[in-house]
Amino acid sequence: MARKGEPGGGKGKRKGGDPPGKLDELFAEITRRTDAFCNEHLDAEYAELSRMVTENLRGEKKSPLLKGTPEGWAAGIVYTVGWVNFLSDPDQKPHMKSKELFRLMGVSESTGMARSAEIKKLFKLTAFDPRLCRRSLMDKNPLVWLIQLDNGIIDDARRYPRHMQEQLVEMGLIPYVHPDAAEEASEEGDGKEAAEGDGVGDGNGHAGNGHPT
Figure 1 (tube, rainbow, N blue to C red):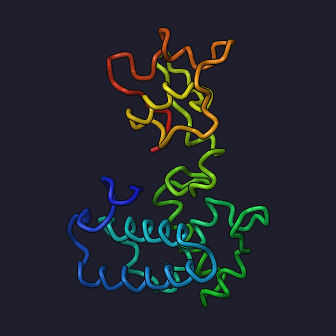
Figure 2 (figure 1 turned 30 degrees about the vertical axis):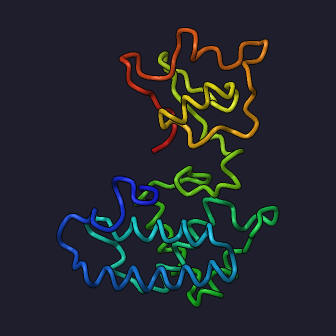
């Protein structure tokens, strides 16, 4: 799955077969439903992520959007984004139980779950998946901050000092400098591995990446 027009998804990435006019109509109808629901019951970030999922589904060579109903897909898409971000957890804001989500979206639970299962399988999604993680959860999502050193060790970039995290951002290995980044490495040498011998990369001058793609 690609984020916001990155390679691998979105309009113009489809490779033959599916009628573009029909898919455009389905995309418009599904996003109309997801936008309306998220803006009323969740928030703008859920609407944006749901639209991104819909765009990636439209961009598939054999788009699954051509089977099923727009309301079923809309419910499955919003539910999937919520599942990744633990929407049913009362500690999350916003939060909503799945039964309530499907009721408000006018579909049966079995239909919404079926569409969601297709999405999860197609894009190999996991809970806390960085590709669909809300910004409010990114700071504490360990999957976002994993990097691979030259020696093959997977490390947590959050413990690196700010200047090293800035380099990792430039390399595209982490999305931004973590708010808790220290100005300098700690006395115990946290983060020094990448600067002293191990490095971040594959040993051939190329950036390594333990971050899920």
